Amino acid sequence: MADHLKKKGRDSEFVSTQEHEVAYLMKATNKTKEEVLKAIREIGPDRQMVMEYLSKGPLVTRSSGK
Image 1 (cartoon, one colour):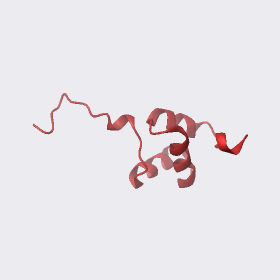
Image 2 (spheres, rainbow, N blue to C red):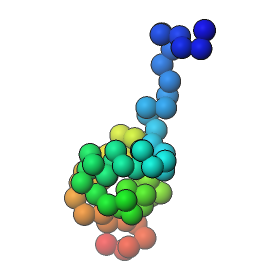
Image 3 (tube, rainbow, N blue to C red):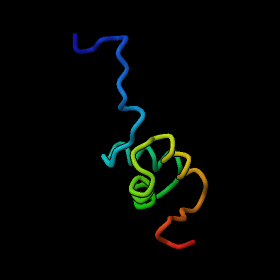
């Protein structure tokens, strides 16, 4: 059975750079597409960490030296 009700996918734990994922993060955090994509590159695919990172205000990355 493909849709086993007790099986939980791990997909919800991760974020991708697909358009619908980026659009959701943009709306949820009030950030631009570029900021969201940069956060995913910097932090990695962990959804909770990306959301926390984007929710903290202006993006300051390791490479910007700030």
